[in-house]
Image (cartoon, rainbow, N blue to C red; front, side, top):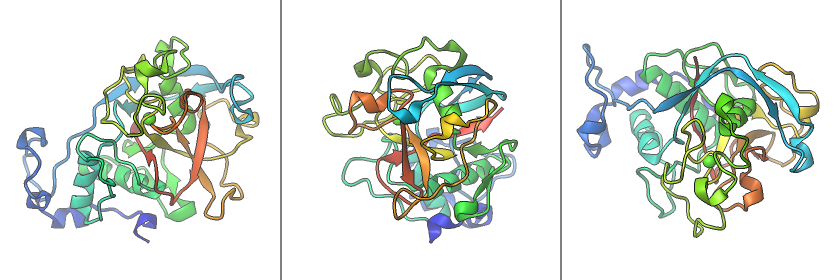
Length: 294
Ligand SMILES: [Ca+2]
């Protein structure tokens, strides 16, 4: 299965040329040529913001049991997180560069729409590809359930569930809102009550305290962690990374965490603290945003 193979894509990428894009990308959005041009597709580095290390109270007493107990989490290393979820424009470039088939947009649109219908493995491979494109050290190795993440590497990766919630809360700039940036979901989120049953281009609602868009609603976002409904009861304080893979709750499990809720969900499910999961090869309302350890 292509989704399960995590291999360096640099050699494959180098075999492709810019013309593999079909010339559809405006040159103004492409990275400038390097001193030693490579014959491969150029990328536009994602816009990212710094999330300063710090401590917060993770979870909520106002939600389902899996959000409890509220517990202290310390993020010991500052990290960068993308302002926007990965878009179709970005993901299609990856597909063109690596000869992967592009995910179906089911007639919506591509461009600045957030990419969805990608598996957890797709997201991990994308992160490694983007790292290699920028000359960074890829974080992911191994394959399948044995996929490992080197959190000390300087490359792109998925956020941990704790990093995601900390960033959604606004990090050290948090004003303590229910949704990412506001107590009014309509200000910051596309969800069932206002989406007209459609996903929307990234960045159209107000950002949160850190300048992050769509952290509540629009699309679910894959996180690194295996899902554990009771994990908060045993979570370490420092940099929790989730439990080991647990017995599957679905025939296709085990499951990884996804966060944020989507355009289909009610206000309850787009709260910052709301937890959700899917089996790793699931394609659906799940996209992702990238982070990098500082
Ligand atoms: Ca989202």
